[in-house]
Length: 263
Ligand SMILES: [Zn+2]
Image (cartoon, rainbow, N blue to C red):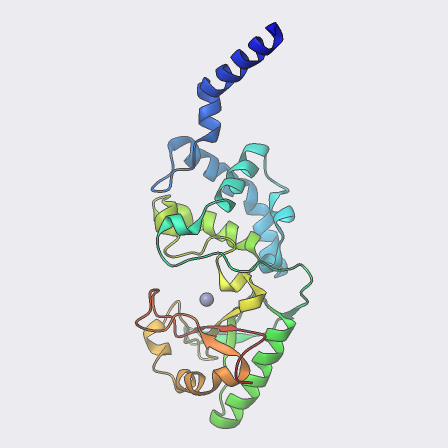
């Protein structure tokens, strides 16, 4: 009996302890607290050499959570875990969780793409596509080349949820460390079609360098965009963010569905 009484006192003390309440406190969504900002800074600093190396190797888009966590201290890992647990439905906007990679995918690496930037050819970063999306992309490019004599390049293909998490952290300070605001510009890990092979997204860019990031207005004027609207579905590609929808119009962002309707 006495033991039970002591146990229940200990439990109530633990529940009432300020440090217990603190560790259970949710991450601030509209601007990080001062300790959280310090944690974010130290996390980005610890990740920097790893990310630099993976970018140099061209393997950043396929990094795993296990690899991402290697340079982190335990409190930094816990901070990342908390961001991974965020419910996108509670943040407003239209983002939602998408099917995660199964781990069984085979990815095709695309090297040697070049486009023109400021009048000069530049070699693009390596990109990755799950094999079914890659093969559909190739079939579609053969068709657009036959029709228009033009092709589109893959500016951004697969980005693993771990790399997406890094990108989210990287962009947080640029949006006042507000998770809610950052989420309007950068998807949370698990919420991007770029990280969901079942809905694999491709951001297209022309060999002349017309893309979404730098020249969004020009992309929708392209003959290639008109062609995609008319024929992409034959190859299993669909426009994810059409004009007039709940999200901003992205004429360059198309996703592939393996079990598509028309092809
Ligand atoms: Zn995209």
